[in-house]
Length: 321
Image 1 (tube, rainbow, N blue to C red):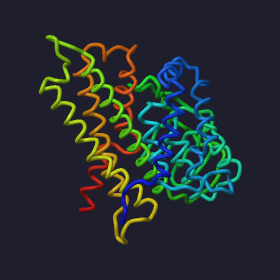
Image 2 (image 1 turned 30 degrees about the horizontal axis):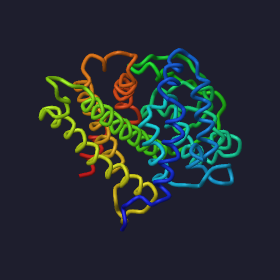
Image 3 (image 1 turned 60 degrees about the vertical axis):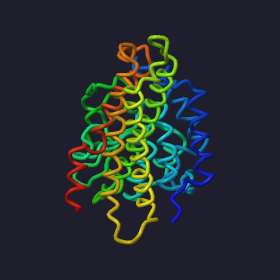
């Protein structure tokens, strides 16, 4: 089996990267923290025009009929640029959840067209990032939802909300596939963030000088960055192998849910290590909200427990052995 990404995947990654680079996501993220969501909505609309928000949506509903691998490619770039908002829920969780519940029509079409939406699936994901359109699954009942209480997190771009059920859409809904795709998408996001923080620290280490030498020439700094590079490169195969499992492209009998859990644990560990080491390399400037690294530091901390805590996911891996 060939595990290398194809030219199509490389082109997809380049397209998303170019779009987000041009959009200046840090400035839009700071606008989001002040309650101005329009700049981020503009970016999501642009992503929808390139088919990104509809990757997991059937063509009949306006999507691309792609798979988890393509979704992971796109979400890694989303993480690399720290795009705020309920992106995981919009691009990954809700398309799978609505499809498995037999709900299609305008609900899926709106997602494909770039409408931001969110969802909560207690106890796996008891709180949801805020969005105008919300869904909740309680005891197997899928409903549209209304916000009852808002909860601030360590990430100022990630305000969560408790959701209460409104109109019932479906009953006896199996949420496992939707929850797993949320876990996988978050893992891809964390992987991209880890790569971005590593690149930021490496660039700073080459530019910053002490005693007439770039600090990147010092062995201690090299070792710090090498540790992060190893963690990122060890996590990436797990994330993409899990995506292949979700797409059904692995040997029969493979425990895909275990692989998804292992992927997020590894990606989360890599992102957390990258955040710590990047802060050590950059020093005091990394603490400031004016520096873009702060966006990654807080988002990493918040996403570590999104769609499965490290403890729960490690327990799933352990129980499968």
